[in-house]
Every structure is written in structure tokens, then in C-alpha cells.
Image (tube, rainbow, N blue to C red; front, side, top):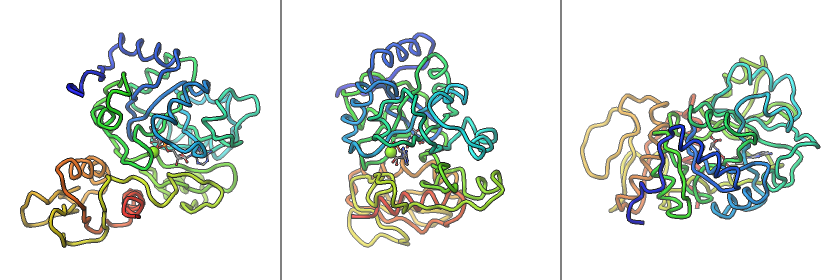
Length: 319
Ligand code: TXA
Ligand code: MG
């Protein structure tokens, strides 16, 4: 593709209307959120949802997250419970996804939910996502806008890099503020976290006033987000390494480090985990695009959002 900016559009009112039309016509668009960019389509339309699965090369057993502007709009599709209300009131809109029971009367495409009787819902905070959802009468099914098992995109150009000309319309919302996918919490039973993110177990536990643990190995859900190999930059990744051991290997640092070299990249010189999370996918993408053949990553403290960083690195490093 000659000009990768050709399919990227400023989120002004005219383009938001074009985005709305695209969704109403069952087309799929690139959508900014505060976590990562999504590949968004009409969640009530099988046609639209099928396109998402096929563009992403996503296995049909892996359900999508459904995005709403607010609770009012979600009520028709999911069974609400007390834990959900507590978390919603404190954290939404924001970077958290809830697994709830799907209402029998729900209009969500059964392909989007992989024929399950549960559904993942989320209320993104990003202004552009909020605006578009406000214009629409339907919710948006929106997985991260990457080919299955690859790195999630954190800018509009990442989306085009991933899908080239197959995506004709991406709304530009700048760089994703968080840079890692939302925390997923299953509320269909005793609350548990299925995917760590920037909303930590401690925060969720405090709101619910009970201990909520991470259970990424849950047997019930067969999904790539929980499969071992995921979030891959397309070259081998090794964790907990102080230095590179091979030619053409990049080293990703964390914290103040001495030394210079074209193969050195730092996630956060100040040792700030939130900054490191924000730089993670961006840096992995850059290293790959600079032609390195493998990546060694420093040890990342396993606290706060560091748990989510290590979760992604662990999966990226699996063969
Ligand atoms: O931050 C995010 O959540 C981004 C932005 C675009 O919103 N979206 C995202 O979607 O990360 P995706 O499709 O890449 O990841 C969704 C995860 C998958 O691991 C899927 O298996 C899980 O959510 N999921 C969806 N429905 C589920 C369900 N009913 N039960 C359990 N897990 C579910
Ligand atoms: Mg994803």
C-alpha cells in the first residue's frame, strides 16, 4: 500500500457519521479505545460479525467483546447482578470487561458469542468510541484489531499495518492511553479475573469487598486470549534476561540502565510500570520492524499492571 494514511480518518462529526453509516451497512471499521484499537462491527448482525472473524482469522470458538455506551443500552442483552453494578458504578466507562449471562431475548449475534450463553461486555472510555456508540442504535462487537495471535494495535497506523487495504476506514483517536487490553472479570459465578489488565485484582477486590483472584487457566473457556501462544510480535521473545545472547537480538530494558546500542529499547527508564505497559506493544512492534530476529526482555516486577505485562510476555514467549 503506497499511502498508509489513506484509510485513516480524523474523528470529526462528518467522519463519525460515515463511521455510523459503515456500521449500519454491516461494514467493519478500526476504532480507537483507551486500551487498544478494535475492529468494530454491528454486534447484532451475523454478516458483520462474520467479517470480523474472517479478517482476524479468528477461530469461531473464540467469542468477541460487545461494546456499549452505557448500562442503559446493555440491559436488553445481559442479566445484571450486584457485583456487576458495584464495579460498573466505580469503574465505567473504563478498561474492564465483564462476563455476564446473555438474556434469551438478546439480539447479539450468536456467532459473536460463539454460541455461548454468556457474553463479554465493555464500556470504553475513549471519547471517539463514546461518540460513535452514542450515535448508534446497536452495540459494537470489537476484538483487538490484529490478526489472531499477533500483537494488539495501539495506533491507527498499527491497524493499517496489520490489515493493509482490507480495512477501508479507521477512525484516528491518537495513541491508546493504556496500551494493554482490558481486564476481563467473570461475574457469572464467584468473581474471577480471566485476563489481567490495568484494573488490578486488588482494586476489584476492594470494590466487591471480597478477594478476587486471577484464574487465567480456567478450563471452561477455550480462547486464544487464554491460550498459551498469543500477543506475538512474530519473532522469538525471551523473558527475564539481563542481556542479549545472540546476534540480531534486541534487548528490552526496564528501569535506569547504562549502555547504548541500536539493539537497546527501554520500556520505562523511571521504572514506571504504567509507562512500561503503554510502551510494550509499541516497542515489540518497533523491534520487529527494525529487522531484529529475536527479543530478550528484562525482568518486569510482577506487581500492579506488571502482572498484565508478564501475562502478555509469557504468552508471546511460548512456542
Ligand atoms: O481492551 C479490550 O478488551 C479490547 C478493546 C478493543 O476493547 N478488545 C479485546 O478483544 O481485547 P479480544 O477479542 O482481542 O479479546 C477478548 C477476550 C478473548 O480472550 C475472549 O476469549 C474473551 O475476551 N471472551 C469473550 N467472550 C467471552 C465469554 N463469554 N467468556 C469468556 N471469555 C470471553
Ligand atoms: Mg485480542
